[in-house]
Length: 347
Image (cartoon, rainbow, N blue to C red; front, side, top):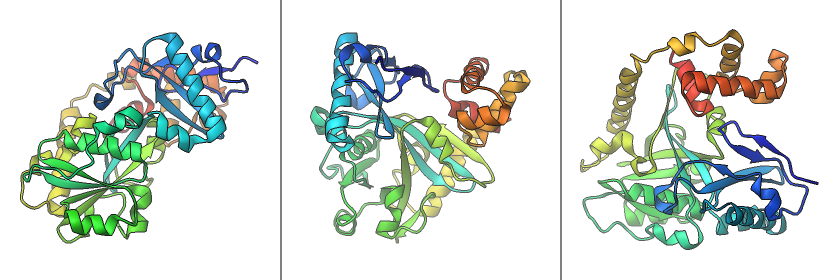
């Protein structure tokens, strides 16, 4: 049976879980051009990627080549490893494309987000595993269990003037790493906050005197990220940043001898206020001219509804929903659902 494919909300095609053997011929139909290049990977914007689904989970994989045959063979190899050895084996051998959102403030929601490729295999050596040698750099302890994600985040931090990363690979080693390396800041996976005793996940806050902690969450794509934003906040501002500008909201205070939490939060709020001022003159004519049904779809998207829920609420098919979303992207000149919803919320 030939595997099926369907259009992915962010563009291109995402594969439905295969019932076949994952051979190269089948995978040619599932390749997509994401036109995203993670600077640490050395990849080209023309390199192909694919989404692979298995056992109820799915991930995007950059395939590192623009050649159709080679990319299809690599996709088949990844799928077969997932089937035979499980996702953990795949994560150790092949890079994934992921969205990482940084949770600066909970109410209003002030998030930045970026796209990374996990650094595994030959790429693992691109990330520094040692303490920053420049004494003028503020040390940032990165607490992440997944080695590929941890290396990508460390690489991103090390690209920024004034900051240097220190990796921490387990909850058990956190206390020792905090005491030994004496970081000025902790970057922490949201899911680990409770396990290390951080009581303020979702907003930058002190984890001990003189040390601020910032949590982040990892998502398969931008749609999943937006659905995960906390409900009930007074406002939402979400800003895409480049990986090598990961700490952009606080770069202006990197040279200070101390990074006090109140100062950091104030700088973050100034950063987002400046963005809001830049967008205050944004032309909402295109938004106002959206047809009624497309406005209804956008309103439901803003509430975190998925395609199936939108279809049920409006009494239309999922494929009609896809068509409305495609038209919304075109009319608003955006590329993702997240960008479209942000435009809607800013109106």
